[in-house]
Structure formats: C-alpha cells, structure tokens
Amino acid sequence: MNEKNFEYLRNQVKYTGFGEGLDNELKEKMQQQTSNFTLNHEVLYGTDRAKATLSFKKSDQTEMFFFNSYKMDVQKDNSKESLEQTFYINKGSNITMKEAYNLMEGRAVNKELTNKEGQVYNSWVQMDFKQTDSNGNFKLNQYHQNYGYDLEATLGKLPIKELETPKYKEDLMDSLKKGNLQSATFLKDGSEVKQFVEVNPQFKTINVYDTNRKRIDNRESKGEKQRKGDKVSVKQGSKKRETNTDSEEPDVPKAKKKIKKQSNSM
Image (cartoon, rainbow, N blue to C red):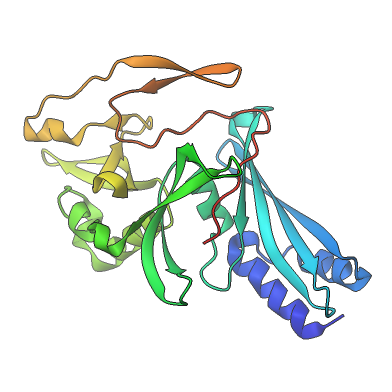
C-alpha cells in the first residue's frame, strides 16, 4: 500500500466532513488492493438521518486509489423513504457532508469553484428540484459574483443583534455560507426575539423563520401586504404533495422512496 496515497485520501475524507473515524477501515480496504471499494458514514441532523456511501477506485495503471464521489441518502423524520444525491470529489473545494445535507434541504451554499480553464471563482450553489440533467438527475444552479447577491449588505437591512459585534457577525455569515438555517437575535420594539435565517441568493434576500420554523414575510414590517399563495396539488410519481405557488423558496420535494439523483460535477 502506498502510504502517501493513504495520507492524501485520509485528509480528503476528513476535510470533506467525514471526520477521522474511517481511517482504519480505509487503510484495510486499500491493503486488500481491490479495484473498487466503499466506506459508510452516518450522521443525525435533528431527526433526519443522513447516510453517506463513499466510493473509491483503484487506478488501472498504478496502485493509487482515488476518492471519486459519495452518495447521500437522507431519511426525513425517521421515515422509511429517502432522498438520494451523488456529490463528486474534485481537486478544489469539495461539498462537505453537512453542506450536501443543506443542499438537499433546498438551501444554498457558497463555494470557491474552479472552471475548465483552472480559474477559481466564487458562487452560490443551490439544488434545482424542478430540472434534471440528461441522466435524469437534479441540476445545481449557480449564482456567481456578477449575479449581484451581497450577503453582508442584505443582512444589514435586518435588525439582528449579532451584526453589532464583528466576531458574531463573521460567525453568522460563515454559517449562512455553509447553507445552515442559523438562529439570530432580532431586536423588535425594545425586545430580543430569537428567529432563524437562511440565504436566498436567487431572490437576493434573506428568508426569516420563527421558532417553529414558520416562514415570516419580512415585507410586513414595511407596510406591504402579505401575499397568500393558493396551494395546489402537484403530482410527482405515484404520490402528491402540496406546494405554495407564491413562494420564493426552492421547490423542495418531500422524501421519496429511493429516488436516485446525481449532482453536476463542480
């Protein structure tokens, strides 16, 4: 077994969000010198169970192994049904397991990506549940720097207490860039109210939720009338789900039984 190859793969696995618990199994599988092997990792995000299957392949020319991709399987609220998505490993900034979960929840993640010419650029990435690629897999939308979404300026329009302290502000922005639904302290009529925020780069805004994770229409504070979208039933496969026709949130499907989806390589 190539020790340098092992160290490289171990670091790849660690920094893609799978920790160091797979080190021994990774070494054992590499020593067996099989052409392909997988490792499994499981995490609970609240009541959602996320299972990752990491895929490794041996080079046809050398004894080197490569970490090619991992498949995420997310089960909602201990349901027997699940959503699946494959994320590819690149030389640049990989999608971590937590970021993958956030993407599958419909939230956006900010990443440094590399184009075909090797140039690095910054972009928000968000899963598009309404479009699939030629293989029938969900596409990933990108909102580049030129799209004009300014997270700091958009946050500055909200009465968030954490923005008054540079360190807390930085932590809040870093969490949002990872695609998290982040708690924040809102200052309202002299009182502090805990709410949750997430980025919405497509509409260049911030989504705000109350403690029950119910979406709050920020325009109410500006005297604008809240829109009430009619709910319509949308058939997908053999099941139906309800979707709000007036929502500015991504169309996130409910858990389906083993729906296989694959992300674009980034």
